[in-house]
Length: 272
Image (tube, rainbow, N blue to C red; front, side, top):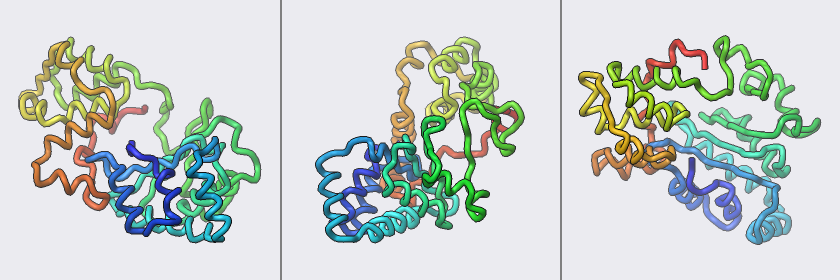
């Protein structure tokens, strides 16, 4: 995820140029991940900086300008096949300013994927999410997943938000290295119960170069335990493997295409 929440940058927009904001957001991205910005925890108790920013907004009357600048900034960074992923945590606690910002982002035609989380039943009537759900223009753009409820028809039959079973994790590894030995399969599936970091490990050039040809991945327990756990650290390892001249380019929004986003053979038949 982004190392710096865009919400921190938002608080400085009133006194910073749009170009400067883009530069700050660019520096917050994880190399090789594309652009993921986190608009996090608005309205849960903010810092002195936030209070000062709020005073500036109220005094200057430039709330709409602030929102429009952020929408333009985020939309400019999004490109077809290089979408910007906007993550909003605890949306049920968001301020009205954040709700309006999210609504404006949803209404743009930019290549944006907006992911929000909230506690069940916490998004009351009259709140922005409820208004978006009943908007005829936006219905086709919004997908709501509720804990314990049936998933939308877009998902395969039997899909769920539960953890992938061990067998499914093993299938991911075998899609890259069909002849992986049993011990390596067991240890990798045990260490990574999330498909994304597991795929990043399988995609590491050091393993691709040494094992992809014969499909026989074999790692010792020490090697597996030495692998990074965090997704950010795994992406950084992949970034380090890029040619030196390519590394600077992949740290900017317009060129930070996910270098490990391929057609995934393992997921074509899986329901989870």
